[in-house]
Image 1: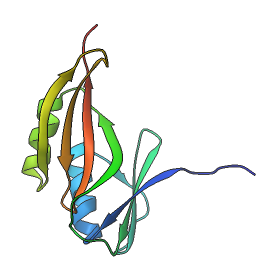
Image 2 (image 1 turned 120 degrees about the vertical axis):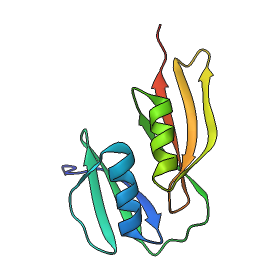
Image 3 (image 1 turned 90 degrees about the horizontal axis):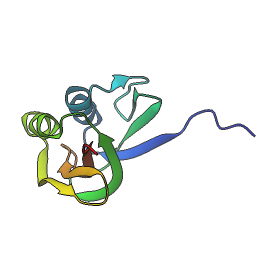
Length: 116
Protein backbone atom coordinates (compact mmCIF):
# COMPACT_ATOMS: atom_id res chain seq x y z
CA UNK A 1 0.00 0.00 0.00
CA UNK A 2 1.18 3.50 -0.85
CA UNK A 3 -0.22 6.73 0.61
CA UNK A 4 -0.94 9.06 -2.30
CA UNK A 5 -2.09 12.17 -0.42
CA UNK A 6 -2.58 13.35 3.14
CA UNK A 7 -5.08 16.07 3.98
CA UNK A 8 -6.35 17.97 6.99
CA UNK A 9 -10.16 18.29 6.92
CA UNK A 10 -12.14 21.18 8.37
CA UNK A 11 -15.92 21.33 8.56
CA UNK A 12 -17.56 24.41 7.06
CA UNK A 13 -21.07 25.82 7.02
CA UNK A 14 -20.11 27.62 3.79
CA UNK A 15 -17.29 25.93 1.87
CA UNK A 16 -16.88 28.83 -0.57
CA UNK A 17 -16.58 31.37 2.24
CA UNK A 18 -14.06 29.18 4.05
CA UNK A 19 -12.01 28.67 0.88
CA UNK A 20 -11.96 32.41 0.26
CA UNK A 21 -10.70 33.00 3.81
CA UNK A 22 -7.75 30.60 3.51
CA UNK A 23 -6.86 31.84 0.03
CA UNK A 24 -6.82 35.48 1.20
CA UNK A 25 -5.11 35.00 4.55
CA UNK A 26 -2.51 32.31 3.80
CA UNK A 27 -2.35 32.23 0.01
CA UNK A 28 -3.49 28.60 -0.23
CA UNK A 29 -4.05 27.56 -3.84
CA UNK A 30 -7.16 25.80 -5.10
CA UNK A 31 -6.94 22.14 -6.01
CA UNK A 32 -10.33 20.53 -6.38
CA UNK A 33 -13.31 22.83 -5.72
CA UNK A 34 -17.02 22.14 -5.28
CA UNK A 35 -19.78 23.50 -3.01
CA UNK A 36 -19.42 20.52 -0.63
CA UNK A 37 -15.70 19.63 -0.81
CA UNK A 38 -12.79 21.88 -1.64
CA UNK A 39 -9.08 21.17 -1.39
CA UNK A 40 -6.56 23.97 -0.94
CA UNK A 41 -2.84 23.27 -1.19
CA UNK A 42 0.43 24.86 -0.18
CA UNK A 43 3.92 23.52 0.38
CA UNK A 44 2.77 19.92 -0.06
CA UNK A 45 -0.06 20.22 2.45
CA UNK A 46 -3.76 19.92 1.60
CA UNK A 47 -6.44 21.61 3.69
CA UNK A 48 -9.81 20.07 2.76
CA UNK A 49 -13.03 21.90 3.50
CA UNK A 50 -16.13 19.74 3.97
CA UNK A 51 -19.66 21.13 3.85
CA UNK A 52 -22.30 20.41 6.44
CA UNK A 53 -20.61 22.07 9.40
CA UNK A 54 -21.78 24.87 11.61
CA UNK A 55 -20.10 28.08 12.68
CA UNK A 56 -19.81 26.89 16.31
CA UNK A 57 -16.26 27.42 17.53
CA UNK A 58 -14.15 24.25 17.81
CA UNK A 59 -10.52 23.18 18.09
CA UNK A 60 -8.93 21.67 15.00
CA UNK A 61 -5.21 21.17 15.57
CA UNK A 62 -4.44 23.04 12.34
CA UNK A 63 -1.50 25.42 12.45
CA UNK A 64 0.46 27.71 10.15
CA UNK A 65 4.06 28.88 10.51
CA UNK A 66 4.52 32.39 9.07
CA UNK A 67 7.33 34.90 8.74
CA UNK A 68 5.25 37.83 10.10
CA UNK A 69 2.72 36.89 12.78
CA UNK A 70 1.38 40.44 13.17
CA UNK A 71 0.62 40.61 9.43
CA UNK A 72 -1.03 37.18 9.59
CA UNK A 73 -3.24 38.25 12.50
CA UNK A 74 -4.22 41.42 10.65
CA UNK A 75 -5.09 39.34 7.55
CA UNK A 76 -7.26 37.03 9.66
CA UNK A 77 -9.21 39.97 11.06
CA UNK A 78 -9.61 41.73 7.71
CA UNK A 79 -10.82 38.51 6.04
CA UNK A 80 -13.69 37.78 8.44
CA UNK A 81 -11.90 35.69 11.05
CA UNK A 82 -10.99 36.53 14.63
CA UNK A 83 -7.77 36.47 16.61
CA UNK A 84 -8.81 35.00 19.96
CA UNK A 85 -5.35 34.96 21.54
CA UNK A 86 -2.88 37.66 20.55
CA UNK A 87 0.70 36.65 19.70
CA UNK A 88 2.84 35.85 22.69
CA UNK A 89 6.37 34.58 22.88
CA UNK A 90 6.68 31.00 24.11
CA UNK A 91 10.00 30.78 25.98
CA UNK A 92 11.74 27.48 25.43
CA UNK A 93 9.60 26.64 22.37
CA UNK A 94 11.33 28.96 19.91
CA UNK A 95 8.08 30.53 18.65
CA UNK A 96 5.65 33.36 19.06
CA UNK A 97 2.14 31.88 19.03
CA UNK A 98 -1.37 33.21 18.36
CA UNK A 99 -4.76 31.51 18.17
CA UNK A 100 -7.36 32.48 15.57
CA UNK A 101 -10.78 31.36 14.36
CA UNK A 102 -11.82 31.22 10.69
CA UNK A 103 -15.20 32.24 9.27
CA UNK A 104 -16.59 28.76 10.04
CA UNK A 105 -15.60 28.54 13.72
CA UNK A 106 -12.45 26.46 13.14
CA UNK A 107 -9.81 27.41 15.72
CA UNK A 108 -6.18 27.22 14.50
CA UNK A 109 -2.75 28.41 15.53
CA UNK A 110 -0.35 30.82 13.89
CA UNK A 111 3.31 30.62 14.83
CA UNK A 112 6.40 32.62 13.96
CA UNK A 113 9.85 31.24 14.80
CA UNK A 114 11.76 33.48 17.20
CA UNK A 115 15.39 34.37 16.55
CA UNK A 116 17.89 32.22 18.38
